[in-house]
Image (cartoon, rainbow, N blue to C red; front, side, top):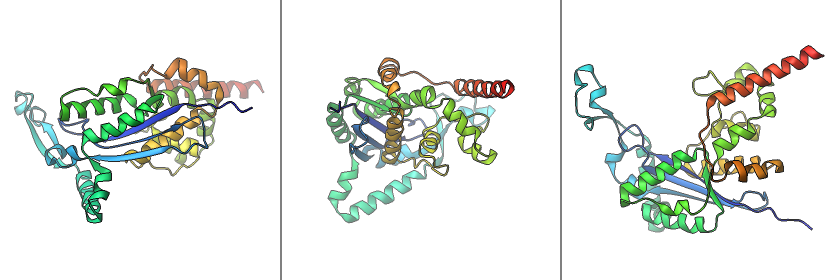
Length: 284
């Protein structure tokens, strides 16, 4: 008799405004929800553009604090800023909204929705989920709360009704293991660059890098679109549970226990791996 393993997980991703005082306001949100322990289960994915954000051009300017522009302006009041450019994604999203409007009101209304209606759908999916998380969950949680408070002047408390997890924390602690390091060592120097952090000095552990590893696709590039990113992050979570020995660790160490990840852990882990491999060679 087959014992069903079931964990309905909602994995979300957000694309936000940035480089201004409006940072963390969500422009696009997507999520994938399903039984992450059953690969035959077909998850549900959703994607929305936030109308409150999209149709407010002031939210899409990049700005700089006046006090940071020149030493002569160092005494300028903290709140004074100057715009210096426009977020190019704004044009892309507006073109998409126009294209959808040409297809009819229903097509536009399925994607571009007020934040309140998006939260209504999120509430429904949360009610059928056992947990919620993201690859960098503290970032996405902050974005959801910032957006809700900006547009509705209160926090989004429903998200606290189920426990949280952070896929970056799980990946850095469990997926980045000796087998991961062995894979890195098998690559050419040119290929290893694809697994480095943005600085190029250390091994990275972004969702894009983890996706390259689990899919064995060195050419994978993260789309930075909410629904597509939530899908690959959902697959990263499925990969985590490929090893059933990790089941208990998820519930004891990660579920409801979101913690920050330090790049030094990856660096030190790789150093230890290299030392152990060197020791093995010496012992031969």
